[in-house]
Image 1 (cartoon, rainbow, N blue to C red):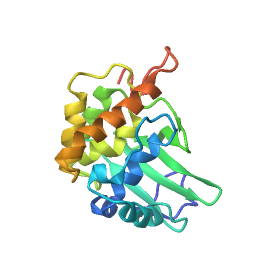
Image 2: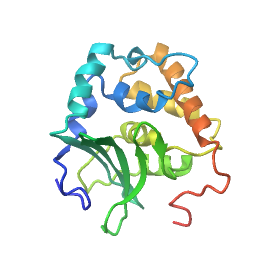
Image 3: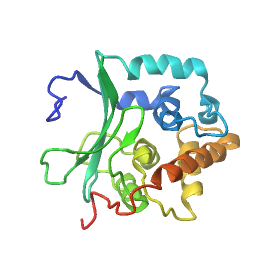
Length: 207
């Protein structure tokens, strides 16, 4: 697998990991590790447990393999999520993939903290619901939505956001008894993170 700018990285398709127990605990709960959460997030919220999360983390963060999750869109930019597993510089990179097929552009990075402009709710849901049938990658809309959820930096979420996130979580296996709690927790954290520069604009503004 080749992505310009990642020539030195041992990139591998990450999509097979999406159905492994422990994936969502690792992918979504990492952004809640800032110490501001009143309640400790649990893998059980996603239908997983600590053993699942630990076992999958060894695969996700293996320096010898950098999982790549492709989220191509049929109409407009898509995205790529890369687990950058350098020994001294590990993190998760999010890139936009222009429909023209030109070089993917960085949109955000997670290195223990989030940096980058991120996406609005409308942009996030547009990408989630417009898979490209002609390109390899993730096609399920709920999975696409959750993969890109850490990019959400919109300070004005619609009233339907909790229900939309809860439905996506149950689709990927979260118990109905805990999916709403997980959704509330994740959106609360994202809302706190969104209160930043009032001059913020999305990188897709005007597209």
